[in-house]
Length: 518
Image (tube, rainbow, N blue to C red; front, side, top):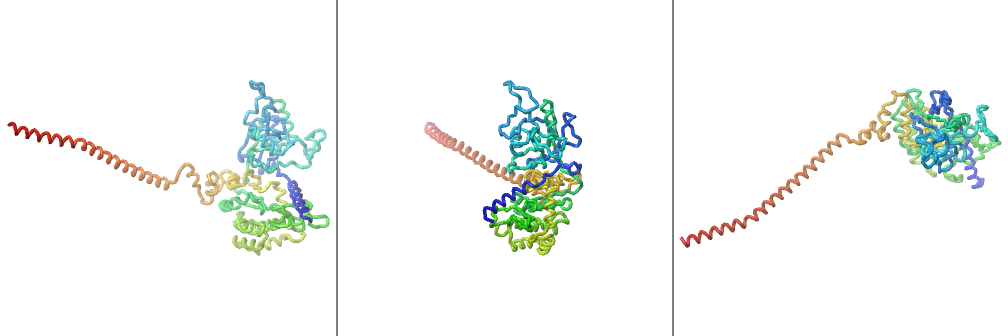
């Protein structure tokens, strides 16, 4: 390969596998529903169990809550940032200038699919004041059969669309669903007939029992999840056996991506292991030096083996967390990422037997030979089953958690996943604490009392200090007033002393005169 060819291959490979992931479905099973879409008005459009839909992989849904508002159809794909809120359906009354009234807030807005990314549509709707967005699909799924009617000249889609983040969706705060064409068309027709439609978007975390299961998807080179991985060990240990944690490493299926040629040769250079079977993108986009995709796959296998040997039994995996943090501290750069010495040093500091991990990696199939690796095959199957598209990703009881990967977000989501009344003590103490991480580490929420108040010792110390301060100020003021009184008395005395002396002199003079004329 030439250098430019390698770079093009790496980019093409990343593009190919990024679109090969199946979307996560919203199950109809009562124990796994994470969101619901229902029409309440008119009753004729009410669907038992709710409408089938797909959640966006961006935005922040209010887990445990719902959004029920009137629906307005924008009659637009909403790709233009200058949203005209005075058009669309149902028709509203006109203002004094003869213009139709804008959509009255709060409202849920239905927009047409196509023309731009899902993120652009939802962002424009959010800026226009929408509380939620329903994107009406404009193409039938082939699996819908005769229940869906495509526009003339439009072929059906063989695969479900994915409401993925285009990379700029961090500013989206409202939720959005994709509604399939066969369901969206009747609702759209009802709104365009100027009839009111009231729709509900609801979210919940499945609560199957008194133990929550949470899964974390990442890669050894992921930058976004570093802070989370540094902090969340405290929560994993505090939750103990009341929660079961499973880390997953995101790799690509090299065979499906065409990295293993017809003759069995690895066609993706150093992006893959096992002769093109398991691959990862090059983190530094340089196939000639630095960290390779094969290095990432090998480290992914190592971390999964650490979990299998040290965390799978108890669901906490303290050693796994320790190793990951040691690796981020010591080996997370191109000079040491693939260094056996650095890896062994991390294993030693995490108190992990390197021989046990090495045996696990070899027994599962290794990374050198052209043969399947059982652990990596399981990770590929788990990735497809979960529908992981954007990294990092977290699931609680099978429901994808949206929003920032932060300690507080994931901890609250886990605590929300318990059956009501079965929450562990750490959730009762810390889930509503202003500083959840500090609460988990200390075992109590100092912030809850400290937010707007102070502890008794601080209060008493402050009270004593203020008392001494005001006592000193009072004493100084008293001394000053005493000095002022003395000065005034002295001034008065100074005024009258000359008069007294003059009077004495006058008395003496009269006496002498009287003596002379007597």
